[in-house]
Amino acid sequence: MDYDLVVEGRAVTPGGVRDVQIGVNGTRIAAIKRQGLKGTKRIDAMGCLVFPGFIDVHAHLREPGWEYKEDFTTGTKAAANGGVTTVFDMPNNPVPATDVATIDEKLRLAKSKALVDVRLFGGVNGHRLEDIARIADRVIGYKIYLARTTGDVVLPHPLLGRALSRIADTRRPADVHCEDQSVIDSNVKKACSSSNRADSHADLRPPEAEVRSIKRLLATRTEARINVCHISTGSGLRLVRHAQETRVGLACEATLHHLFFTRKDMLTNRLLRTNPPLRGEADRSALLDALGKGKVDFLVTDHAPHTLEEKLTESASGVPGLDFYGGIVAWLILKCGLSPMTIAKVCSGNQARFFGLRDRGNLYVGTRADLTILDLRSTRRATSRDVFSKCGWTPYEGRDLPGRARWTISRGKPLVTDFEMS
Image (spheres, rainbow, N blue to C red):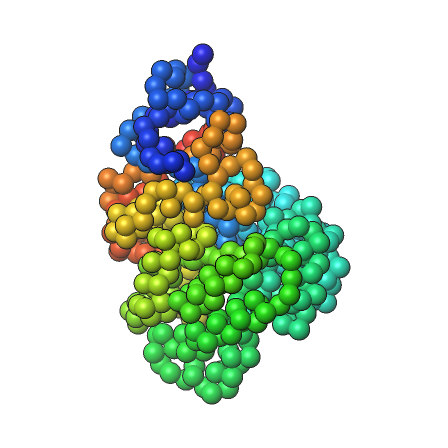
């Protein structure tokens, strides 16, 4: 039997890494064998690691409303460039995606423009909690912002319990941005922002803001499944891990930039302003250690593109990350000692299981032919020339990354082949 495509390489499975051939017919994996498969097309990836397609569950693709920063085409090109085959898009557009009309418009745009699979989070509007049930069949989950950030969709903390109760009824999970707005407001009043230091933004949103917000979230009685977004502190992570001992359906994520950079890096790179801010080396080391031990569930980009002008003149918060997802994964394996099996879990398997995507996340016969093939022998220096994101810049500029996605295959179709966009 000839397959439409045969991929030969070192497949990363829950049981370990093994040399295999993967036969693809149409959009599905049809066979996985040691050898002997024949195909109309063939990819020789021997020496490369073949992962189930990476799933980034936290990205801001900006459309509609901020297309000058990013849109579904450029954002998903950046995703494919980084080895990401499924992207979850956040709802904090200029008109927040909180109701049927706005969600349907985003779905229409994504279907017509996206190169990889895009799923949407619905925002939670404290004035219209009834919309939570109305959009349930259109979204992968719900995003709750407990502090102000880009866009205008914040849930007052007194409404958190009611919102989570309604979300639990939908059987969809809730992603929660945990920062305590009262801590931030208090620091603004103390004029911390009067400092001329490039990292002064971190004083306005200190570790205390994250820790206090996580404590309040965990004290809320709910049956909803919850993912604590972009944990940036060791203290916050310990709170979540402790709660997971007795609480099911609780997960947490770490971003590429909180693992790679520290607050000190902001002194020489003003572009690194994010919410929550970068922390000290102790927090970064705690996150890396936890990720390697499987105590962080998801590795995410929190891809949040702004123009260079906005970053330099308006101090906009957020950094792009999709283009270099594969490069940072290579860094985690080769420089930080994470095992390929751990990477497969935090980049694919855990996401698919938590969010109910049963057709992807592992290399099994019958699953979607979403594959990320990582070449760990291809060091490159990150530059804006390699960026497909419309914002046109990267926080990793000038950094040497020890590998990258060599092939990105979505539903059986190679989108990136030998490092070139198809």
